[in-house]
Image (cartoon, rainbow, N blue to C red; front, side, top):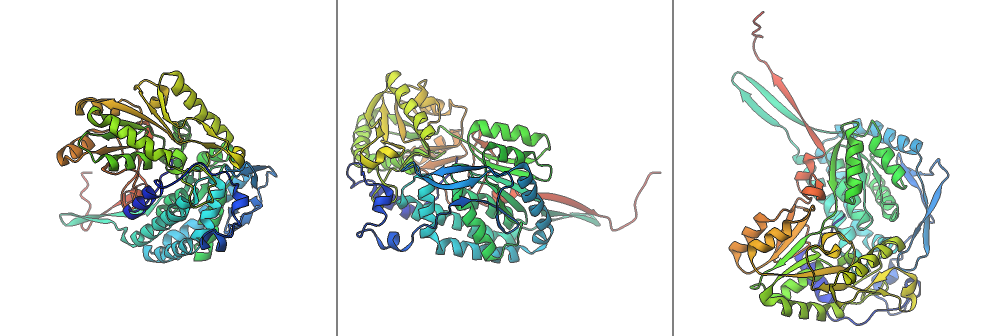
Length: 533
């Protein structure tokens, strides 16, 4: 669930930053935030944290009518960040009604007009990157080194991309002898976006940008664990000139999501989440025949052939397993290494993993932050125990980090299991934490078959210096995205999504417009009607 976007330059910088690091840091976020030797960015851009996370309906913050509140916590400290308003069914109705009322005027604008407004929003996102990144770090536990260079910026890039593409949405003309037909590309109406907690603002942008650019309106529900930056995005849209009702936010738990998916005036649902949630959303959407886009989980293979550049392959494995504490849906957590270089690969992998810093997410030197919640920590810890019990070898890591103030948060060491087999739970099931399994293989046909032996099909990676083999294996792998000699790069220009249990539909690129528009065929007769009656 959820995905990141970095440029090759960013990837190189981030990979390099994971190398010259020390042991786990123990200072708390609050203690370190005012340190005199912190970079200027950290001193000058303090996060503006809300004490309450309300709804955002019809262009303004709105209190939930339920009167029900629940806390959102800082994963690094366990402290309460804000009280979140639980939307009632009436609140969902109000948000959808606002979006429905705003739709005709917004859809009637030209693509260029909508694009100009969205470009202003993108500029505001870039302008407020530092502040928004700090809010994201406080809400998610991810390192500031990531959030300040990836999360907000990749969201802005999505808004910019679809702002520019909005004016290119055109129809078709079909010549039919003396007659003709034309095809209109029209928006769907009110769309529902349901976000995930690993990339909150990025996912909100990935869903809202193509929807709004195509002329739709949206009601967005952020994950209940990370509710804060969706409200910031809503305010930015309003400030940029997006009319009231075009983008609304409803907060809450699964009840809010169910009410939104079931609403008869919602034309389409786009979800980023886990497989069980995706199945439930698809079943509920079927009741009213809503269109759905589902970006779900994965257990992706990363294949390293013995002719690969080993250092590059290790870099790819690190980026594909430990970025955002391993809480990335496309992570290549099944690392297949050909027997000829297996031991060399593992040795270099362990050496570089040992240098990674687990620590205060607000510290720019931190490489691995906190898992999202105590429940998720327990889940990941359970998989660590299961790996040991199954006979896998812990090459490095394998434990919760409790040094000093880190004991108040949900930190886990980056972990590498070796001596794994395909049937182990840690290899077969999505963990969504910093846990990598390394498996040996002998032949190309063998590894392709093993890589595909999973119900998931989100992503895959291949490291080889044989051009033909790289393309041949990429074609054979059952995945929505395959990287050759890199991993986890998701530029906005490239479609993203999965096959099998990993999802339906695509986000990003011009392919996203296919899921936010519908075609209307119009036949034009220029002569008399030839009726046989």
